[in-house]
View 1: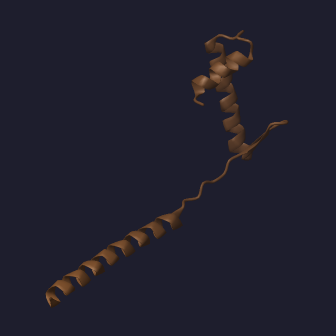
View 2 (view 1 turned 90 degrees about the vertical axis):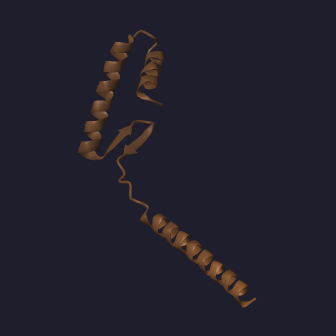
View 3 (view 1 turned 30 degrees about the vertical axis):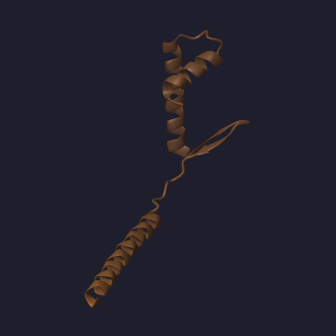
Length: 92
């Protein structure tokens, strides 16, 4: 959901008593508050809804290494296959 859809949903939940600009200001205040709390404490809890935490995303270097090794193995296999095939033609 993008920010505009979120604002429209907020307007709908409030009974359509808010104008778009007022709802947008409320949402901007909410996002700013959430950002500040997440930066300060690392997590935000909503009673009866859940907890949101900042989680550090780690790079998946292992997958890249395995993929590169796989590509190299395939490349070397094809080179070996070509040499064997060429050697059979020379022998004939």
